[in-house]
Length: 164
Image (cartoon, rainbow, N blue to C red; front, side):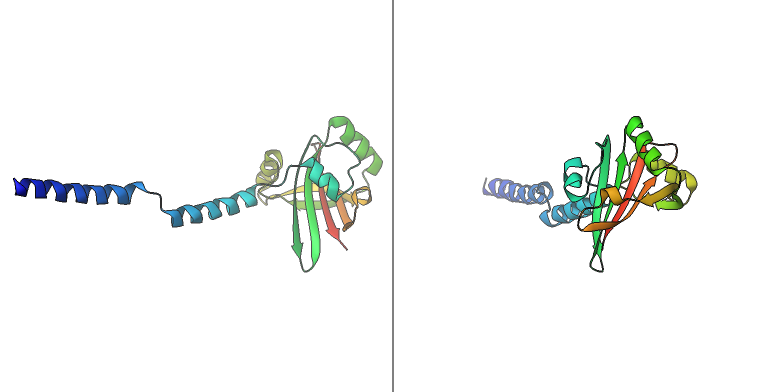
């Protein structure tokens, strides 16, 4: 009988050890995966708060949708925003700026709206063409330079603003 009890105890200990090593989460891998996921999400997502954007720059209209990001390099700040306007606001804003803008190519980033990403993929270069005009009506310290870019055949504007 003692051999039977000893065998049962040994089997229980081995089983418990094996099961506990498989069932618990690996906190090191979980933390690493969380950091990697957050980094990947920051590359794919921009800020979509129109209120926050409105606190950083002048907004002469109410956007339908907005996605934006800020960055800093060499002591200069940069803000890139993709703004979707209503058809009426887009028409009025385009009439104000006219067709006098310069032809430019916009690098499409992963956090841009799907429609613009698709346009960039179609070009094969991940760029889309647009007409750029000075964005003076958007300037607010520290963003005192840059362009507003009209994307043809859409109601999108791309704002590319920099600090002085």
